[in-house]
Image (cartoon, rainbow, N blue to C red; front, side):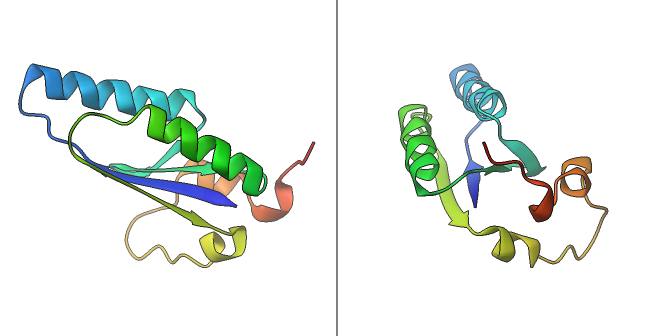
Length: 102
């Protein structure tokens, strides 16, 4: 399962830029990979992990802007079509059948 986070945050003032940076760093430090600008995704192992990371996301939301999240299965994520550009290294390196479950 994957959790996708989409966000559009204001970056006009210094405080808004700082909030953007703090939120983005939270995503990176929490294991999210950038899919494209302002779209980050993370692999999760089941519904319990989804709920845990959803709560962590809520706890670290910036004060302003728009943040959305979407959970999709690996099969749904794998059916996504790349129309322009090249796949990222993370997309090439980790396939559904290569996941290790502990």
